[in-house]
Length: 145
Ligand SMILES: [Zn+2]
Image (tube, rainbow, N blue to C red; front, side, top):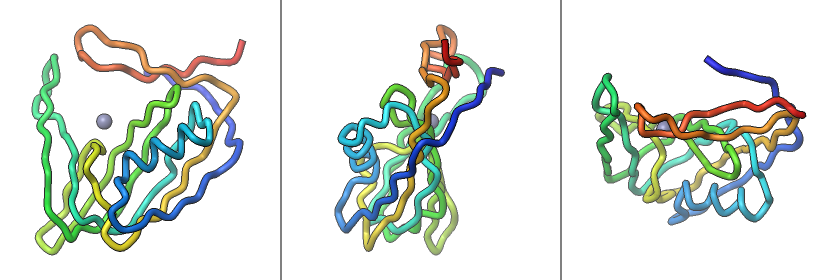
């Protein structure tokens, strides 16, 4: 386990429109507004189609499966962390048959709308560093010098 404290600086609130790609829109705002580190506080709305990935093993190295679904889908929840401008977010979706979720991938197109908020944070530096066994990057919270 590793943790540290950060401070909220400001909160970006956005509405996305039909056809907007959820991840690409978040990445665009993060880049345009210079949010090097932040917390995606939440999002909700609806999707025409979705694309997530989820882990398929409990052993190392992890194995990912990518899943695409056709809408209509409701975004029930979406949270994440931005470290050095890199967005890592997971979301929960539903339709009349059930509830689904996973790691947010490019290809989630907004149906009617999506509303989201992102807090820009300071006070510590968030970075992701490679983990040799996991073949993934792990979050590190570096205290200010
Ligand atoms: Zn993930």
